[in-house]
Each structure stands twice: as C-alpha cells, then as structure tokens.
Image (cartoon, rainbow, N blue to C red):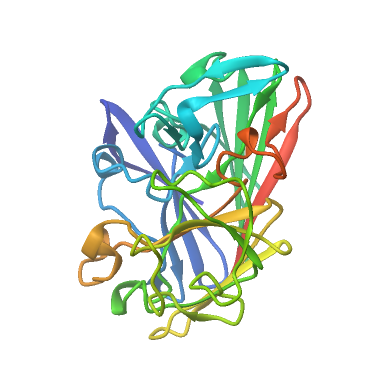
Length: 319
C-alpha cells in the first residue's frame, strides 16, 4: 500500500492511499473517504479531480462518502420516538445528502488493515440536526478484481443513518461517453417524484416506462420528465446493477444489501457526456441507499439506528 500527500484542504494535508489488486487499483483520500480514482485494466472508471482543493471547491459529492443520510429528506425534518427533529436545509426547504456538514467534507482517521483501509469519523450529537454521537466507520477493501466497501455505525441515541458512496461511473473512461454505457438495473419499481425531487410516497411499476432497465439499454436511450435521470429504484435483490462500457468493453457488477439505488445523469452538464479531459469528465451516479425520505413515508424500510446497536451495510463492485 502506498501513501502520499495529495494536497491541502483548509490548510490541512490530504493523504492519498493506493490499493492494488488484479489489474485493478484504487486511490482513496482521507478527505471524505473519497474514491479519487478506480483503474480497471488501465482505465479510470470514476470521475476524478486532479487536486484536493477541487473536491472541496467543486463539490458535487464526487465519489465521496455520504452521511448521515443519503438523498433527500422532505422539509428537512423527521419524527422519531414521537420527537420531531429539524435538520439543516441545503436544497431549498429540504435536506440533501446529510446537510451543510456532510460526511463527504470531513477528514477521516485512517487505519491500514489487510487488503485495505478502515476510516473513521465521529459525528457529534446534533450535527446538522441529527440526534446522537455517531461513530461512523468505512472499510474499503480491494481483493483481486473486487472492491468491497462496508459501512458501520453506532450511536449513543436513537437516530437515523443511511450511508452511500456518491460514485460517478463511466466504464469507457476517457475514451468514450458516460451516457452511452449499457446499464442494467435489477428493479421492478421506482419512486416517482415531485418537482423538488421528493418521492410521492408510492412505488411505480417500471414496465413500459423509461425507467425499465431490466433488460439493459444505453443510458441515453430514453428520456424522463426531467430530461435527465435523478430517480430512485427499489432493488429486487442484492444484485443491483450491471454496467458495460460500449467502447471499452469493461464490465462492472454492483451489489448491496441496501433496499434501493439512486441513478443520476445530470452531473456536470457537458462533463457527463464529454470525456476529452479526464479530470473534468463526469459520469453516471449509481448510489445504493435507502429510499429518499424513507423516514417520512409509510411502506418503505426506514433507516433507524437504535442506541448502542451497531448496524452495517455494504456496497460491492466486481469487475
């Protein structure tokens, strides 16, 4: 394992750790537990920035960890144990990806473990409005051609917790477009949204819609009412998705134990489609998660973390 200084954020040095597998390598930053690059057979298949400062200034959650709760919480509030909690607002009246102090902009304590890293951040009670002192750990392990990410958390109060990594993928890397990738999502239902991208509270059948990716298709084949995809899919099983570069031929399988996955194709405007400059290349976000606003909706698994009970979730990428 290699370790080197990648730059500085807010005057503090950012370190990059390099893990190596079977013609697969991954660079991980201690700022945001960010996947800075993911090379498969010589092709970087995730969006990358060249400097540490870019990950703070350009934001976009690029390939960083998300917490405490991924995606949107309507009106930035929820009720737990008959008590209402008001969260910080960072997208109109709603909260997105953990709020103003999101986990993607935190520095992590790093411990080298077998085949990978264990990264820890302690979120204080009340941060961004969430109850409980939360000890949050991310293990990033590379074995052969499999990247395994395991999240764990324990809180001293009942709270809510739903992590993810905000990956932007393009299996073509710099030699082709992100939206021309062939994508299969193993999902029979998606969650329709309102104009503020808050789910309407029910699951809709994908059959006959632009949200039907079950047989695989080019990402840009169909259009949605938004002109882009920024929608949540309810997963049929732990095998969430398959993505194949139409130019590179590289194939990725996505697995998770979380019940849903967000797909977002609007990142970086032309960056999503134009792969000429690697550091500015966008990608298609695939974010295993709980359903957006699940804590406030009936009929959806709620991301409740009981006091002093550790929970774990994982994302696994196989190439």
